Length: 157
Image (tube, rainbow, N blue to C red; front, side):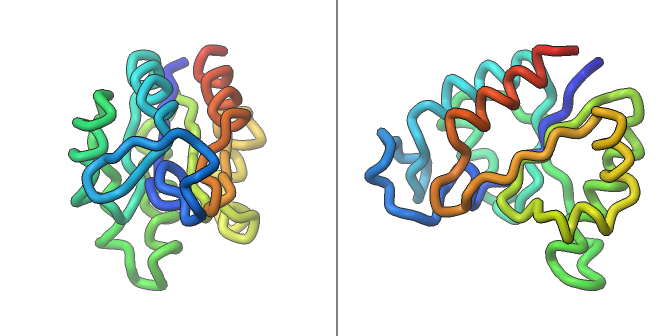
């Protein structure tokens, strides 16, 4: 089964905390962990990556600088009827429904239980084992353990 990665930027690739914990590389105006380049390159060969972020204007910079392929981004601007997170949630739900037959990984520092349980679509996908949710600590960004978990999920088709 093909896997789709829904990837946020801030709090995931770009941590809010100090950069001293990891070896960092410059990507446009920000710094990211050096390990992300190889990990994202590997993921893009084995899955489809879509940006699920408000950083859409910088997405091509990340893609180019980190040398991986992305399928595009989810446009949640048209669903801002309630607030940013609900618009994002609604867009992700619609995207998942339009891509039945695939499994998904949502990597987002805002993927809190209160947000996910409000979605019958995402809750059902999780119950079926078709959705892995990774919620990195926003001040650290995605950890080695979380990256490994995603890689193993993608590998197990």
